[in-house]
Length: 113
Image (cartoon, rainbow, N blue to C red; front, side):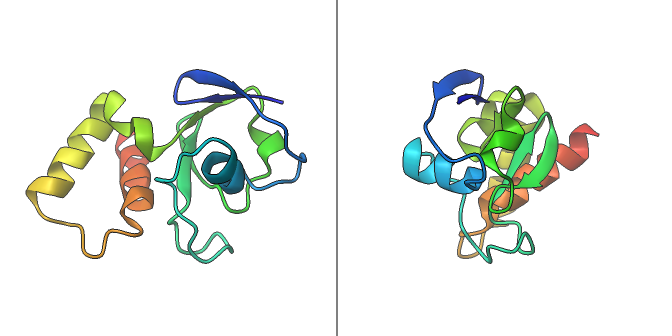
């Protein structure tokens, strides 16, 4: 299937119900999106789909065909995302850092809507 991720097109072979998270991490090597709880509760796996936050751990890959997916790897290409990352660094928000990518994605989406 064809996926549009970070403004690039990728051809992937995966079962339609495979979670987007595993396609991003295992098939495409985009490891900035993290696995946390696997239940869409913690947000570590958050990505943007057409500008809206979704939990990649429970989003079937077939559900994003024909849509624009943005991961943490490309968030600084977005003007708002770049400002969020700058603020994160300036205010030393990060603790262990594991779930920070999901938090940055959620903050970016919030500020854009």
